[in-house]
Length: 632
Image (cartoon, rainbow, N blue to C red):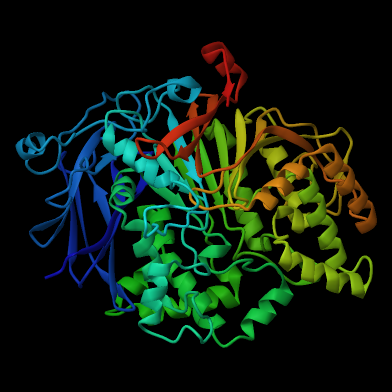
């Protein structure tokens, strides 16, 4: 008899019609999975098979716009979700309100009387704390609130639960959020959760996972205690998503995801020399192929709309095959060998909010004389996704697992290192630069200076003109702390490789250097939030703090002179932070107003709690509404 192994995960909710969603599940055997909602909406899908595992992505049609409706998952005629003994609220799908429509709230799926009798709530959104501060006063996309969008985001979640109950890195922010939401299902909840990389750690496994690895192979042989193949990747997702509260949270809050390096390996695609070294090992090919296969199954598919799924030839081929393993293996191997054949980046729309999620790992050009964060095809797609039809959105969110703007000293070190590796100071310095690049993880936008400059100019262009949005926010993680920074454009500063020529917009790779255009009218921000659950040594904390200091800036300028790097097209200062801890940021966007909160998971006598560290208005219009900003 088939059962539910993992999931359900609510992934895509259609904000254009409010009537469609997708739900991802893993079953124990081949079967047909049904999602049945209280408002009559439903969907079914047969499972597809990969490496002995069975998955389904169910498209749910006929949802009521502007509603919150409970759902259940069935295999055959047997309900497999929610569990019979669950004390958590029912899983729900919340849809945005269509223009001019009246909001409705549906009762629980299945037997309403039994749901009420066991005390489970059947409607309403949740956020896990009482409404307070600017972000809570701005409405959410829930059916009983003013039109708006709440976007929570973070990265770097090492999900292993401590065996003795004493977590050395502190409470998991995602678990704490889930626990709080489950305890108060009538409170506000995020409309979408953005997972900005390192959802799993293939190179840092837990004690429990190592025991499973040791049961199937010799850990003294490479890759040792790291993940070797697809089956072992499934252990990581089991560990990350099986926690009851997190499982419930992901069944109720739609999520968008993108990978970062630890989803595959630390420093993934740092340089051409790094790639040559890894490809020379006997275990790397299986690791990268399995990493991309598992990412496609567990994360990437749910990022896509039903229309995009219908147009995806790999998805069609995997579903059509009795066993899709070899189809997916070929795809993953080709994606690694020739990245231009695959696009992991994607675009989502949440009312008047546009999200462009950018692949900053697999789409790189690594040849030292052509280094780029994005290959030309990917760069052209990102440019179009950002600039197309600017009048259709009030806020532009760009998801980049790697921060665009770093502490200034770190930025200058990366730019200097890139110049050394390119040979500006000769071959000895180039060899030193490559060693330093790997040892110090110098791999962000600043480490690919031409890409940094072009991306900066793209953001300036997106934030300019009569149809400019109110805000352009780059959402990032990776660096195990949180901060806010805002750039400004010095007048007349030269931007290498950027194009500010009026008229038809050119390809982002075009141009040999121009004077930067006028400063944007939109507020452009780098919002960085990491980790969800991980640690950072005290020495690294001190280094990040020093990176913002005046002395650090002076050192950075000296390195820029030594590397002959020239000046960056923008300057920036710290607007908030750095904050250290397990944390999540939430953007609340309504009309052209925006507000930001940062919460941290802290341990207390009553268990883990979410503590508000920052509540801040981001747009001038908000000051009249909220009149304050708080930081702790």
